[in-house]
Length: 74
Image (tube, rainbow, N blue to C red; front, side):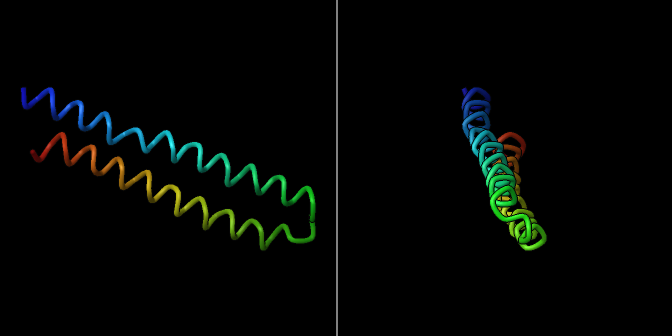
């Protein structure tokens, strides 16, 4: 019973990884759209896109860490 609850909890914790994938796609899709509108701001927009990527990826890593904590510590 406990093992099945751990597996279900870890599976639910990994749902955030799909959201992070969508978020990364939105960040870089917006970068492409913005550079297409104003190519002179390419360097500044790329820095903002990398910041957005890093923050979105941090959320994904937190979700993955929670899934591993559920699986291997409880």
